[in-house]
Amino acid sequence: MASDGVDMLRELDFALAEADSLSVGDRTRSRVLGDALAARAPGPSSLGLPRISGAEAFRRAAHQLDELLGELGADEWQRPALRDLDVQGLVGHLIGVEQAFADAVEGIDDAVAEADHVSSTQPAAERQRGVDPTETLAAWRHTVERSLRAVDGADPDADAPMFYGISLPLDLLLVVRAFEVWVHHEDVRRATGRLPAAPDDCVLYRMTELAVELLPVGLARAGLVTDGDDRCLRMVLTGAGGGTWLVPLDGSPARHPAASGSAAPDSGASASAVIETVDFCRVVGNRVDPLSPLTRLAGDETLLRGLLVGAASLALD
Amino acid sequence: MLAVEIHDGGLVARLVAGDDDALRDLFDRHGGFVLGIARRVTGSAALAEEVLQDVVTALWRHPERYDAERGSLRAYLGVQTHRRAVDLVRSESRRRSREERSVALREPLCVEQPAGQAPAGALGEESDVTAAVREAIARLPEDQRAAVELAFWQGRTYREVAVVLGIPEGTAKSRLRLAQRKLHQWLSPAVAGSA
Image: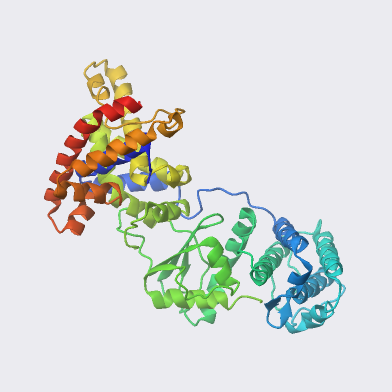
């Protein structure tokens, strides 16, 4: 609401003009909504962010963490961060993941294919104990540079080697890597008393797309998929990198809504969730309780809660 | 699907996210308001519907252009509607060479800030205007003031004003209209002084 001056008078005038509202007939409503939806199809965000590559998303996420680590004081590296790890140990975990990733992509070692993400990196995390933090930071930077070199020039659509049980094209696997780096970036921020920070908008866009693509898997884990069930759930992700998707309960891929059905009072989804994109990513990263009040729900809340709990189960941690 | 958003910010965030249910909510909440202004300016049911179409489509295509810091969604839609309606009347007027169309233009609905013009605050006049608005609202009879405060300060529609005050919609409308006439009369000097 405008607070002063001419803006204030304008607000007042229009507030009072509300009394002169006219009723709009169903035919006009249907025509206006239909024409609007023809001009812009529902689903994608109007912000129109550029779609960056998985490698670029990973590079930007790594840069964000790098900047944060570069500003940490000596005592902050020893703050408890995650599980039994302090900040330095958590960076050690990331060094271990990065080494395993580069080894897999370069074909040196595929031992990570079915390995457990946490236990297999525990030795790398423990190796950082007592090490000068500047050396830990240098090692982290070195492994990131190695990963970027390893994927440079590679076909992004080719299947990447199996990685911690994940089988995805290289481009998407790099988005998974960006996702993990950002989640741990926020872990470090939390551990050192800093406010949470969203990733770069374009990185968030790629992370959101990936998470939405994986929602049917989360839905299946939550035991909510039923063959032949023609209902769907509506996910409205607001803010940068967001969009609107319908998640079918028959387990088929999430999709944007169709532009039809404009005259109906609503789109007919069984339930709707509205959530900030970055909070949705925190849920998928298992850093925000899926049952927290950050999400506005309408319709069958049990289904929506199940979907979000299923989504949180996808996190690597 | 979702209950009507009381806060414009939530509704606009959903529009940005491409939520077509939000478009329907927008239409059901503000469509009649837009049509009312358009009809008043154009004097034509057909032209008013054309304006309604343009304004709704424009907001749906580019909801990110609305800046909540600069005012309510209702005022934003009101300005867009008024501007589009005036443009349409002018173009119709030229096309048909009908001089009488220009009469509507001499009675602008509201205090519209021309594009590119600095806000009144930048001219150092806002405190006088603000004080005048506050004083004018305070002078209204109690029943009208309650309706105006809900409509103005809380951004409620006249239907919501009726529900909150426990009065029929027609009564809410008439109280707002009476208040509108008085406020226009009292605030004319302030408006003229700030233009």
